[in-house]
Length: 175
Image 1: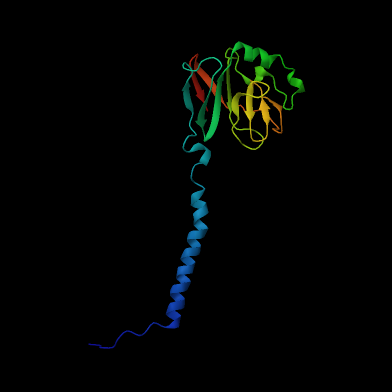
Image 2: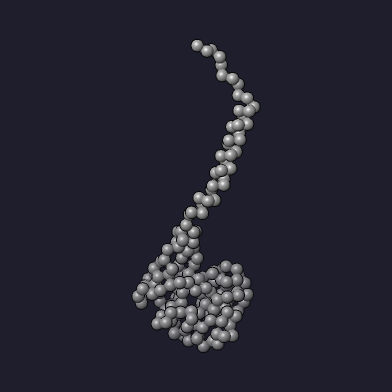
């Protein structure tokens, strides 16, 4: 029977273990981005799916805010006066020219569905405020009309349209 004790670890043993640990860490760090890119796009996760909205409780002249893909969406039930006011403007003279007809769906002109983020610095404007009875962003004074078109202030573009469709006269699907 051999009664010799195991040899003390040498410097070479330490370097061998340390090199192996660094190599394993490096391999994991290099592999992580490759595995991570297999995850779904963040815009499709948690709230990216289409949402359905019941329009029946929204009275004429009222605007509601829902969230889709993490962004506020304004759904505005416009009155005949708001529609007439929006259509009486010569849209070719606006900063971001777009007609009211191009911003709504035919047969459903009373409904306007837009992204509720100011196109200047990303604030959320308030409805039924400002000179044009549309939206007013208090941060820097951008004003939008009842069609969501920029009319005054530093905002460079109209409130963005979002993809939507009418499932019925009282059901809307966003996305």
